[in-house]
Image 1 (cartoon, rainbow, N blue to C red):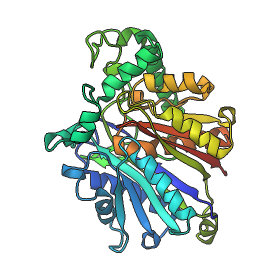
Image 2: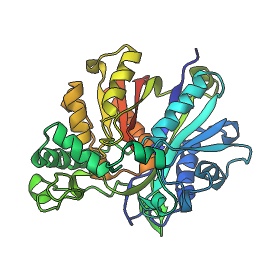
Image 3: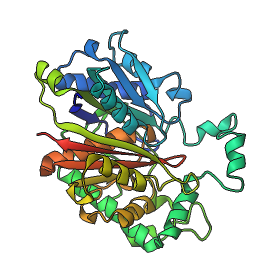
Image 4: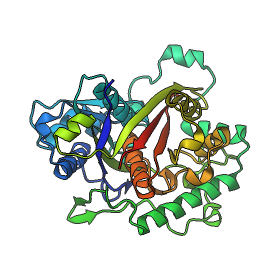
Length: 381
């Protein structure tokens, strides 16, 4: 079987809700990273077999196959196709997985995978404005339960005995780690500055320096009156996009490109759709088993910080080294632009692996409906 390698990975800085990226249409924002990928690699976009693009809320600005219109917005040839992928929060991670699978299978030679979400322009929950999400058969099967990620986070905190103090400690640490990473220039090699309204935007803007357990203490619970989940220990509503160029070692050599990492193994798993966010636990077990690796073989973990209980429960179940978990901070500190987050996490994890010369990295995302992706990549240089 052929291999699949990542040649380059780029992302926008993450914009906070109604912040620096809020005036940029999702197709145009996507085009910025597509253009940057071509500029950095010198690849002729006419040779790209497909653009696989994650996006969750596919209405309004993000409707009509945003992956295809991202290609056109970038000025790429009309014959280059694009497809939009939706696996909830893991959409662009699934795009990366699917691109790698297609390359390994010999159906594609050169693919761009990534995603976008402009939550400032297409608000969370917009899909509920028409029709009946989930359908009557599912609602009957789970009668009396609510499909709410916030309630799911509360259920996880209760099941794993996680106190508000523990969650707030994790949240404040996320801000501290993100601040240290920004100050250290950890993101500069892969962040594409974006100009909007005459201003150049180059740094994730959701970060709140000085966040502490004490500063979070005044925030009211968001989902239950006596709950432990609030805005400060949850991911931020954000805007952003990211893209990765995926090909084979042989094709990269023909193009004069040196691959950064090899796609090692991917897995997807389902879990309880009510608690909803526990999927990364079985997905991690599954991908490690397929890879023939142990948890201790992995040098860095990116577990999306949708809510603080998610990575903490994952940590408790997997026994992973907490020092290797989200070392650059996460979505609690810098935001979670749904359809773009999987690809954004991959660019961040790859940057960490290269700086620290870590052989393996594992990324996993909890997803609406109770699924989760897990992906292992192997550093090549």
